[in-house]
Length: 569
Ligand code: COA
Ligand code: AMP
Image (cartoon, rainbow, N blue to C red; front, top):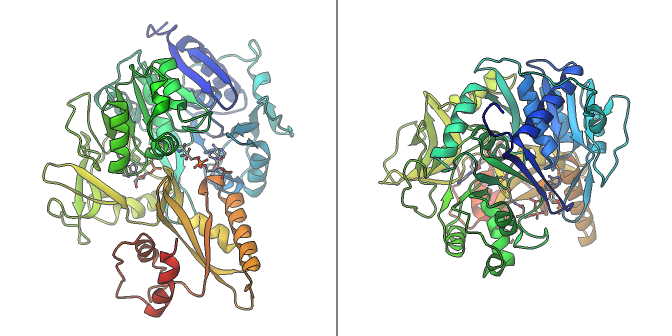
């Protein structure tokens, strides 16, 4: 057809959790997308309207995203691991005309019915979508209500007229993807059409070294930015083949899961999070599983989403015997801020560094006064304006928050929220967030939303959540709660009961991905005189680092009392 790829595979769907696999060619994909765009158009979706998607890793998620793009409608995908309250916050903010969801997600140990979550979320939100299109999966049949329509019925050939592309201008929004800030209210990152398409297409060859017709596998989830950019848009814009993988690096069924897929589909490049590699390494330290498969097609392994620790880097490069490339970026940018631009020039790797700033990004390290620091000195990593194409133009419906969150810290710079340094050779080192955003298994979570869930418990007066170092997940959340006066919780059983209630609340309100397990009951939280909780100081103590105690601390004895508790895990 038009670009000569009609019979080439656009999508390989591989689902070890259900046993399904399927190949969809470009011609078939186009047909499905045009048909689903027709379905959405019949439901009144027009250019500029929002459509929220709450889907697991199934090809229909891509079909729905691209159908929105075809109509000029704005999709907003919500990660399946988020609970109703998080979904509700996104529905409230995006005000979608239609929601597209599946009846369930399938995790290795359990099937999660999505529809009751969706119904609860709509119940909680003051905005109600007109319609919900539900993909019924065989593992769980969702109960349908008045506003619900069945995906398969809507998509019956002959029942719907495929929709043509609707023209948009380059700066029209393509999607809104919510990400965690420090408060409980998620930030709606806006992505435009033109800059995004240009940047991602360019990145496939120049940053990832992928040619049209090759297989590029980003083992992430469509609910995250890596999924948006490198499962859906970039590979398809570049004429490559993408893989929709519904499974995990381990346990589906074993630590050879990734290598099996690489062999089956002759994957040229694999992109995942360091956590996934740590999980494989833990289960199969000698990489015995790797020996069972022919992974000779694999040229490079790309890792992003969290800091790539040198040990994981070393293990992966030794076992695979191919270049392992760290790349640093964020939901806000949509593509790497720093990487090894292998398609332009493959630079020597320095373990612990995602190499150099990507062309288009003027990355600088600043001190508190906004002055550039000398090479090797740590500071706040900022990007000198203007930002390159594809990066966020604003936050959905909140230009002021965009300016205050990103542009007001340093005049003329975008604040990344990460700290680190640049060495004499221009290599960037990203050491971690300077704010209270958590990064759990490569998933970005907000302290604010976990704290809000804890604070809703009737016994809790106040609380603080910090991210502490974890061997496997990079970071895990740890909570400290102060009880309301008059609440008497003394026995070990009482404390245990409270703990499990709090853990359950976070699971219900934020979602299973928050993975909160560590909760301590404490007498008070360390604060500044203006009432700001000293989370960073707490985190430094918990991680055994040298702690910086601000001179504005209200009562130093509170911190002293807390030290042993912080150090104990
Ligand atoms: N829908 C519903 N629940 C989900 C989910 C989804 N899409 N994804 C995860 N969850 C649940 C899990 O079932 C788990 O629940 P449990 O506590 O009942 O077991 C919980 O959320 C935590 O999940 P996860 O973070 O995946 O941890 P895990 O211990 O199950 O698995 C790894 C550990 C390392 C295998 C896993 O974290 C992983 O694959 N990481 C790679 C990270 C990644 O790809 N990040 C994307 C950014 S690039
Ligand atoms: P997200 O928006 O979910 O992609 O998370 C972005 C955050 O993850 C960044 O601000 C960093 O804190 C962290 N991050 C992502 N990639 C890397 C990397 N390669 N090295 C260090 N930190 C990273």
